[in-house]
Image (cartoon, rainbow, N blue to C red; front, side, top):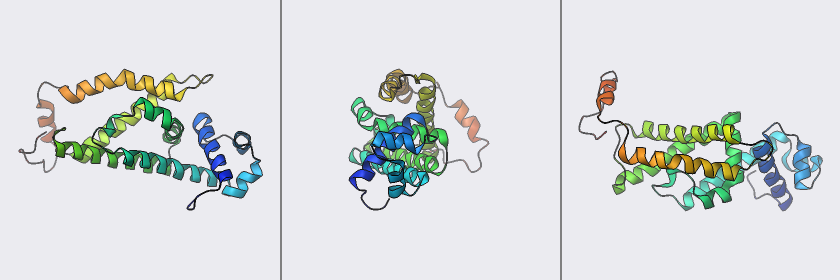
Length: 214
């Protein structure tokens, strides 16, 4: 929806975001209507169809996440979400996880934007001296983004209790379990030398200049 939705439409949209995130996109309009305290017919009145409601939710979640990121855009933002952010963004993040599970245009556009943002955050870190420059900055950003989102999605699938789902708690547990290892890897590296990289570059057409740090 391009204009600001009415209070009723916002209530329906928020109920749909929560219900889609919890139960998936196969949930019926009656369940969403019950959550919002309206009739299924009123949902159709405001959004035209279930697909129309889904598009409105997609747009809302996209705008919410990007607005949040812009408000605190710095070179550390790509590492994950803090406890306060998790609590604030739980409905949006849960919806995003469901979207990645479902696939489709929204999931692809979200991932592309996350990769783009991650590359921007890392570029800021390179400029400030926090991060090393890369031979392939776009590839590095894509790897980090897919690794982070994939890890979060796998954790969500393996650790959710269907009887008592608590997305905020499971995401906090994910961050606590993986952050120490991730920071150690980022700070100290994994390999003791660059042999594997050099061997790989022998098979890459037009390898980058040797004076660019790896």
